[in-house]
Length: 315
Length: 250
Image (cartoon, rainbow over all chains, first blue to last red; front, side):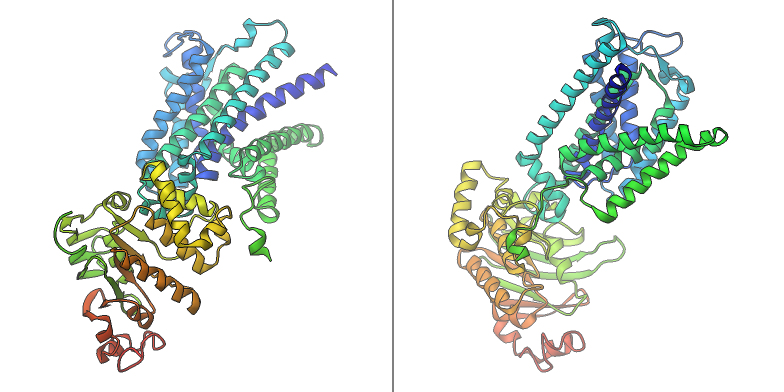
């Protein structure tokens, strides 16, 4: 029984942590229409920043400042935001699939930098020993993980509350206006370029926060955590849950991460050991299938944006 | 306010790619309180002209002046503060926002109290918008959407209103209602420049008109004179015989 509870806590921590990144993507795609295909890159920036700021000092590697957890979270958001500002200034004039290609390329570049800039990132070995604050508060992994789950839940709650306030504000209305018709929005006296950039930066800051939460829980960061499959997973979470709906984004994270972990468990039991190494590929195919099926039978996701057509239009 | 016409476009060269101009030196002007139509066959550059004035297409040569002040190349979002309202062609309302929210968007450059007062005035002018204020704009008919788009642009009391094919896709009745709205704008003192495919209807609801063809001025004058000009038939021949018949605009 304790094993089940322990695993449930572990599962909720990771799915809610990814849920934070999905909320960031939802701000960009769901509310603003920005096709960011470089999500993994901005999560990576947040994760490495957290590791550098809060981790222990190491020989021949930058960082190890051993700063408090909260400082690490803030630093991760700021670093991802600064990265997004530069990326956004360079790419946000691009539209739709062009923006997707550009951001995808940038995320791959970020991953390669993580892989090769050993002085900053530890290279292929990554950075280890990143502290989890709950280990100083309690004894025993279940209690520690439960406390960490509480931290993640608080972060998720605050993020959703802030995003709900934002999307209902005049700035939030502007995001939707730009998503629907940039020319009409510009004719009303607002700069679409500037608002798009602001949404891109804020969304990436939230992705950086997700990376920081992840690395502090796992205690280790490696460039192999930020391959393009991560971007694919985050996108699938948003599409399955429903874009332009923060509750949908979170639901999608829980469902898709649940399918991912369950499929991994099943594959490890039923697939012959000689092809176990290909299990990850099978999981990716399964996630792809879920994405395609969702787009075919429920393109707005499980709980997408509020229905637009009123009874007047239906009658 | 400086002197000069409400709007002057002087020898405007503009297009979507630097070496491929659509407009080859087009000139036009609009006085305050005047409705001016820009007509011409498909590909004449009508929409490009209004977009160049609205700051959505780069002007590579020539000038655009607003009450004598040069606004050439000014970006679209900066022109709202200069008193320019622009209603883009079709899909020009924010479908997932309510009608009220669409109007609030139009009042974004103004203090909130002033914007709300203006919205009340707009509801007085267009009661259909007030009746459905809490509905999503996406459920409105084509004509009602156009009226909402014009009403939204009116919030800031623009001195110049640019309309890009406002009756496109509308029924004759809805188009007639929209032209009434356009007339109302000029009666309140605004200068109106309107691009239209439906040449006959546009000229009947305008004071003056410009006829463009292949990105150049071909004709201009009083709308009543253009309506019977035989050359217009030649310009349109083979393009839209339903809009303009040979021997002038019927």
